[in-house]
Length: 109
Image (cartoon, rainbow, N blue to C red; front, side):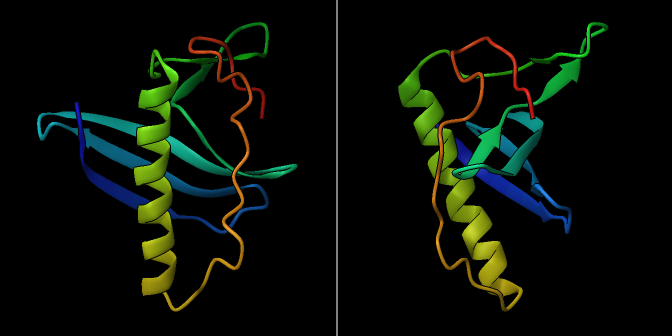
């Protein structure tokens, strides 16, 4: 499986830096990934839904670290390119492990 397209939609919010859509193998789209500024750097949050108990639960996510790393690499590359095209630079693209990135947990952000 390969990420064949990445679309980045920057936003100017405190922690949320961009929404992202990815296309897998040119035939499957996953929307609403997010680039978020965490306490120790940027991370990619998978699409999630807020549950009745207030916790967020991923609705789509990679099942292993290799797939997660491949998606994050493509997303960060596209995010950096989008910033450059807007005339901005990302001085330090520091990454952190996504909260709840235990392949099925929740993202509390």
